[in-house]
Length: 304
Ligand code: SF4
Image (cartoon, rainbow, N blue to C red; front, side):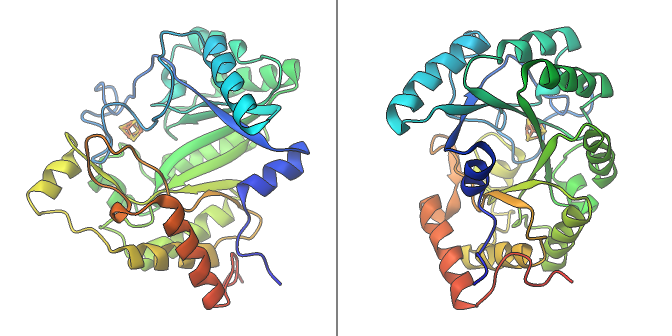
């Protein structure tokens, strides 16, 4: 029987021989789509705190954050291998020397991978060059997480991403030269997209041989452009069933080798106007899986 989809936890276990946990690291960094160098106001759904939650204060050093989180996770889950996850905002938007300093601090015992979240238009070759040297020196693997959300460049304009599909393709081709794994963040239920956009996204990511994807449903937070539209009744949100249908279609058109980090995201309750239809993320994940079983479908089922 085909597996429903290529699960991240299983992939990590196979790659590292045991369970591996991500430890979030919070750097004092902003985003060029907020401070005016590429755009102002940020993406229309993005809250001031950036795209990451549940992390320690950035006044602590990288080493301190990693050690503190490692202690907690080790105790709770009996884990021994970890990924340092630079999650918040645009981590390659730091001065190169500062970036090097922070990344070098992540080479602590039991860290097997460094994962860096950033924008596709904000990852210069000199940063990649340094990461390659760091990886060779320390034996730590590198993965890069790129925000994209959709391949529909009209939608990218509407949500004020500040880049189009072209910058994403350019970033992927440049990162591929270093053999770093690439994860892409997507929002399959953007109200400006239709099912064709979802399918095209799956096809383009497959063609580019992206390694992993992370799906989030659209959430609406106070003090964002989408929040204002939502309150005025001007934002048409899709139903949970639509989300499930879109995720399944996306998976069907996605190459089966691509690893799925998440089928649905988690968002903080504070300041949120709309998150996951008021249902726990794991219940929606279970619903997606049950629906796939009912339909006798699986990741890659429609890949020719
Ligand atoms: S690129 Fe990321 S951090 Fe910057 S505004 Fe958009 S979602 Fe927020």
